[in-house]
Length: 76
Image 1 (cartoon, rainbow, N blue to C red):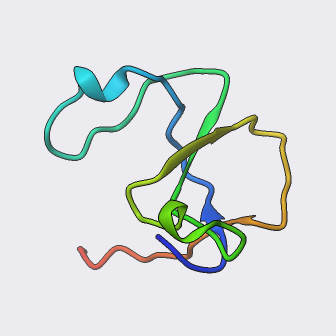
Image 2 (cartoon, helix red, strand yellow):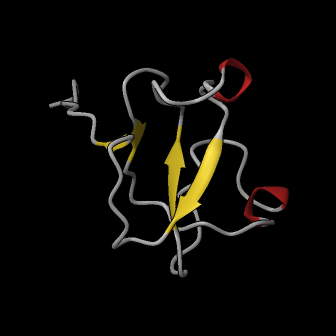
């Protein structure tokens, strides 16, 4: 998502994971050192504020530009 903050997600970061990942709903590596932060934030330059952007951060890092997105499953 692009907007106010980049998003904390459960995926671990691996540089070459998507070269060999499933085409549909890849879950990401099972472990790692850094977590993925997709999207852009209010502090990004325009060409970096895009949904395809994936950054990596240490899970203990905190920044004004990192947040969460609340979501609910629509399936029973």
